[in-house]
Image 1 (tube, rainbow, N blue to C red):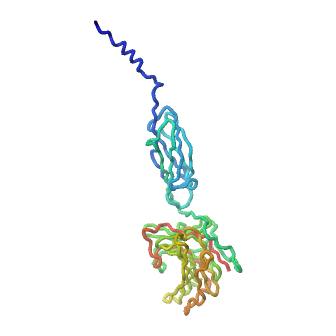
Image 2: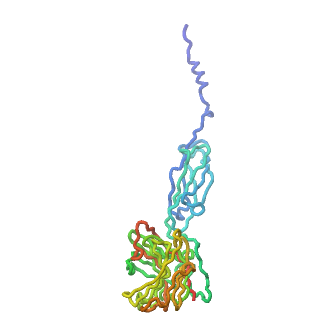
Image 3: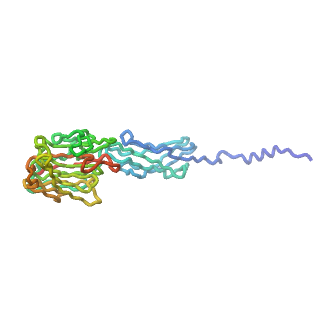
Length: 391
């Protein structure tokens, strides 16, 4: 018997095994962040754009849910938080998520936040989780400070406010202050070059800022003085300030006799309302210097400290002297800690019965504080809220 032809049977079988188009399982793409985003904190970069990509487009819309999360950046303070979803239309393979950052002028560390995909529809997250890091690079020059700390009285019994600088304007008042300039070592082998540049002294937010900066092995700072502009004999003098810290950093709020140009130092007398050695950031010193000439220089003084867990860079404190014909008393936050009488100079001339002018500065290095080392951070600043004189 002859075998039957098989061709019709194959045709029948092929009819049953052929798949209809509507039975095809749709392709499920993977979605991911291809890059992290890093940009300077400027108006030009006030919105960070995070791209999303699919490994292949699909015939269906894709929904992606996302939210921001803090790392070192703080939501509302450094960036505006988002928690939302977006649709990647069918036939496309990319989209973007936008996050606004907060742009200000304040010097901070570079800060980061996360943008996290929390779920998706019609797509899967590559690797099971997808996040991108946003890095806000800070290139500002101003310092953020709060008004926290001690606040002194606005008046005292038997005394009236005769002069003050509250630093409430937009610029340093040059009817109150002028500058020492240069890099002469200033008698103490200091390293800084004093300038009048706005990088080293400026007014912001009701405070005067004096800033010490580093450029390689070179340092700049400011030394402001009121000589010939604002000079005083006796009174209660209050200066509210935040101080810098660090090895080799030496801030001072002090006074010299107004006759300094004619008689020189120390014959003019020096009253150190406050000095701080940056390596001991919880201790301040009050001192007087005197002597007929520099070969007979003498000084006397004392210090006071706050708890060792705190520093004078944490918040504002008020540094004061109460000065009259009988002597000088130093106070920290209204608490007296040292007094000298008008016989303190002994056989040397007593210069503290003459008008004096203010000086405020940050020195870098010198005989007393030593010199910066690898632990010293720059820039360092002193913020002064006010200088007030009551008589």
